[in-house]
Length: 252
Image (cartoon, rainbow, N blue to C red):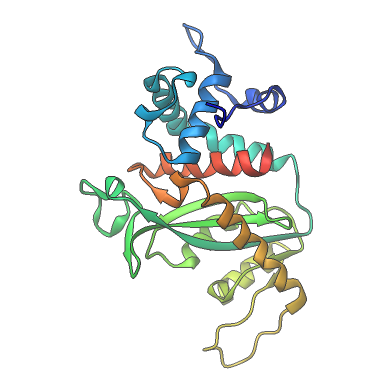
């Protein structure tokens, strides 16, 4: 198949230092297996539908499952993102990702805490909270159930914010505690105030217009079908799919 995806040697050289060490029997060809995993995630295929050029589909799935549970793919994205340190501006936002019935089947904890899937007006969803740099490249992610507030994601991502001057966010992040927490870290918030505020919040409107870059980032991530539609029951595995997509699109 001419449209298969293959990692090149330069990309593999950047990734290999994040791979866990092999114990006992040597691993099957990393380049072939990882290329197959990327192909499956990008096209939203079942593992059994993997092209034969990538080898047995069970090998692809077992590597994907094992490394996802270890957090390898998330560590790869975080490590590569850290090499391009942002010093000026970051942006924060959240988006909904549709949950397929295969992800919502079988009972989870009440309120979507175990599966991180919740019911919204648009159906069953997972909410992806993200921070990106001034160029719209993702730095960190956090997932919650779909009905969760933006404040939950903001609180979780606060500690991972790099040392920058500005943070851009929409009205969903207009909270006194969040503004104060940013100021304690030496970060200036560029966030419009909620309409319910008695006193108007002043912000840099020209700078705020750059926030569309994080919206573009979400759109590019959703081009990957296993990101736009959640098929995985385990939230850690689903987060690995998001991290893998971000790595391939932005950091390789």
